[in-house]
Amino acid sequence: MTLLGPSLVLAGLVLTVLLLRAVVRVCAVRMARALALRAGRVGAHASVRAIATWGQRRAPGLFGFLYRRLRPDVFTGLPLTLMALAALYLAALLGGLTQEVVEAEGMLRIDRAINAAFAPWRDARLVGVFLWITALGAGPALAAVAITATAFLWSSRRSVLILPLWVALAGAQVTTWVGKYAIDRHRPDFIAAVSASSPSFPSGHATGAMAIYGFLAYAIARDAAGWGQRFEVAYWSVVLILLIGFSRIFLSVHYASDVVGGFMVGAFWLLVAFAMAEWRRGVRKP
Image (cartoon, rainbow, N blue to C red; front, side, top):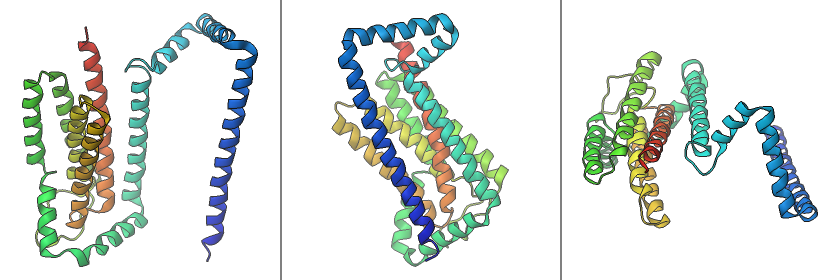
């Protein structure tokens, strides 16, 4: 009952923000329509050109920088800016999670509770299934996948994707192993079928799966025929990545926060690989 008051307050704040957003959007739309009706389309374009001219005269360096960063028609403009912001956001989230793992006892209690919740389900058959799944995220499997993908990319004349693929793999692995020994977190108690000797945070399987399988999904979907095929590739890749991460929790070799941290590290390097691949594509265009 003590949580009811704060919950209602939070719900009220969220509802208020949503209502204010809706009101502002409606007012903005009506104001824009009114201005368009009064000034006309030609006048609006003239106003935009006047503002652009004023910006170029008053602050040419700043205006040029913003124009290059916000251009939607080239990858080095708005798309790259959004990717960089997303990468910084992931890095900030990872930093916060790492601090919680190192300093907060509450996180450890949550991790132990999640781990204990799966204990009744760890019978021999399910353990065997998840042992097979988790092997897909191991270092040798990821290296084999990367080598095979390199051969296919080379033979299909898409060599611009080879370097980003290996940057994703190398960056994910180096960051993971540095983080493991810098934080030096103990693993949960193992079940009889598995064991591991390295520290726990972040999960190397989760990191590698996100970076490698995520990039392969991009490489396949990028040149797919239609949105239906792209969705299928993205959907099943996400399923595979999540299953590999979940297998580490189910097999009691990682805590849930280890897997989440691994996904964040992998996603960071995945964005780096995306940016590098698209930049190299643009450079190669005639």
